Image (cartoon, rainbow, N blue to C red; front, side):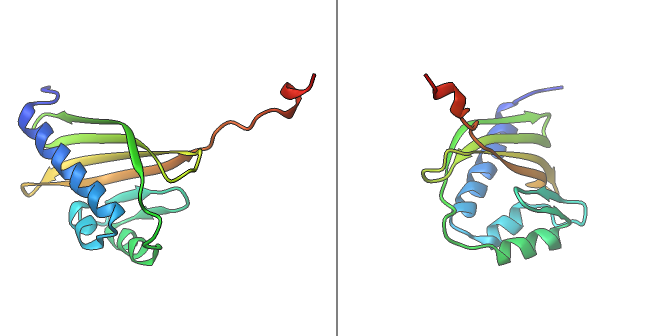
Length: 135
């Protein structure tokens, strides 16, 4: 298995960057283009489990278009062979202490990279134990 061959890695990195740009700009048409148009596509989100491209499209059209800006950190893009890869990243929004996590599984289908499965979750910071601050 060839991991991170230069050409597919560069292509997937570009597709991921295009996805991120479309996400924060709420360019739903581009997001739709970058997800596999299939009833088998899965997107598990912070508060929703979506199966099939129609459910994913409906979610995107209904969600608020404000407050989508975020800062990525610890992004890892890995390709396996020519046509399969993953993109994993953490993100933060505004002043929230929560750390978002996003996992995407990408495949090259019909000559283009598309997300076939995605997962988004939030990791809340640990709650301080008030007893730790007592004298």
